[in-house]
Image (tube, rainbow, N blue to C red):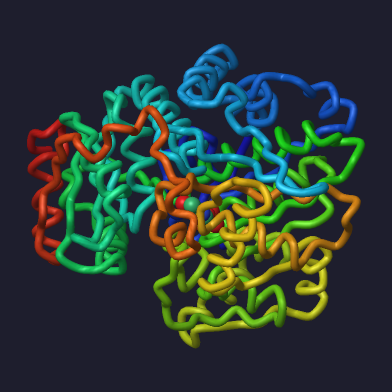
Length: 469
Ligand SMILES: *Cc1c(COP(=O)(O)O)cnc(C)c1O
């Protein structure tokens, strides 16, 4: 499989190189040159497979030529063997023809484990083969950091530095990062906000001289391997609900458009998906595009669903690329306009094309809490605020009551106690068994000033298993 950039100017890469790449050199994102397509019979024959075996069949074409079948199988079995539920991604019914796909049974209790547990193992495999070491620097406002550290902590060839805003992440989220130890794990609390952290990561990618030749790898969802891993659970859910003979709709709590883009790809690979609902919080740039063809940057608002607090959605460029007939020059132009003016609209027929599949809703904090309370009352289930947004949007936007609506359950509610308490159901919250001692574990973290040179100095002093690069 070869991968091409959404802006058309960077060289095509194979899977191994795309795994180690961040943005393409032309500023674009990598996508497969040709998407594999499965027949209905082929998909139907996968019914009942254990998760890791389904994952092998869905993802094999993407890694072909870079990772041997036997190695890939073993990696997948290990990856999804870590999950606390035997079904890995169980479905729970909320209402007639309405389901939550529980994607929070991984080690850090959010769906990001599906991709980052795999990414860590893939990196280690590829790096061992190349006899190479890399450095990861990531910024997090919560879920990505802990999932990335959990995913990479056993990697011999990776040193990982995660920046979070000092005293501005929740205690559960902080402890999920700072209680993991290893000579290759470095938690850094920056005396600044999330944007400051993200700017430092961007600046480090732009000028990597402080790494003295060591390669920097991206762990945010611009990394293709993350999207790839998320395609699998759309197949897994549909197969349990009568697919591919029957169509299924999905409602996806969305921030950077990564998770829902994986659903779009699953459909293009042959899975009958009749509708994808973009569920956002008050940070609604995607909803404004889907409802009114306006992709315009606005101010950031802090909400009860912080993992979806974004101003622009990085992966949206991957959908735009398809909507524009995969013409990289059009995307480069669109993005240049966006950078200068802060917004764009697309031609009417392209927007209409998107609307055949996508609907959207922006959900307020108040509606989020109402939904948590209502679902608890009717089912006894406690939803996390992101999942609640998915439920609300799925209910408002669904096109057919006969088609199963699957809401992606993106996080366990204990990660977001504030929203759950505001909804009045906090008493029902319990830490899962494997996390029950989280609040008594020792923490390790370095506090650094909001200063790029200080952070880069720290990385070059500790980037080789705690020793200087
Ligand atoms: C990351 C995250 C999201 C948003 O996912 P995207 O791929 O950025 O759209 C939603 N919910 C939770 C809990 C998350 O951690």
